[in-house]
Image 1 (cartoon, rainbow, N blue to C red):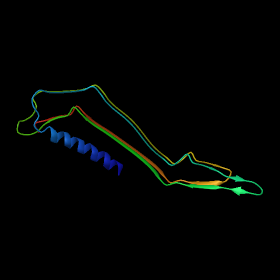
Image 2 (image 1 turned 30 degrees about the vertical axis):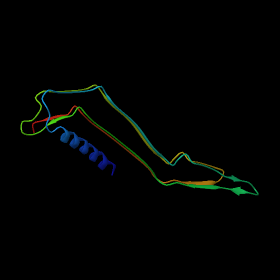
Image 3 (image 1 turned 180 degrees about the vertical axis):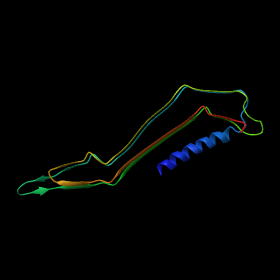
Image 4 (image 1 turned 135 degrees about the vertical axis):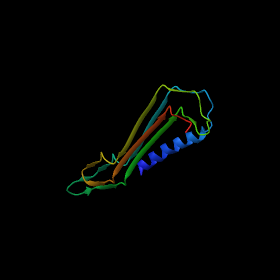
Amino acid sequence: MFKKLIITGAAAAIMLSAAAGTFASSGVTNYASGVTNNVITVANSGFNQVNGSSSRHHSSSGLISTGDTNASSLTGNVVNTTVGVGGGRHSSSVSNTATGVTNNVITVANSGVNQVNGGGSIYTGGAGAGTGSFNVVNTTVSGL
């Protein structure tokens, strides 16, 4: 499922950039000083604690039951894209410059780090995480 989202996002970005630049002019210059994506995605049902007690005359316990956790992140960039398609209507001079692209992505799904003190139970669901990142930088398509 997550791979389909990544592929769909990348395809959509490329198609949008192609449709927007069908009739590119001559002498196109694109500059980008930098692109930065810092994404943090967290799903957490962990870090649970049950504190029960037991003595000769009294006992107590607790129960924690959590569901599944899922976390997913998707970043995408299309930078400096110039497209000229068909009929000789394409760019004769293209200069694309990008000084840097940085993606820092942290994705966490957690149902662990649980603690039972004294008596009790903790039941957690599964944990799943997925991350995708794509960059299309300095792409020029001309006269297909």
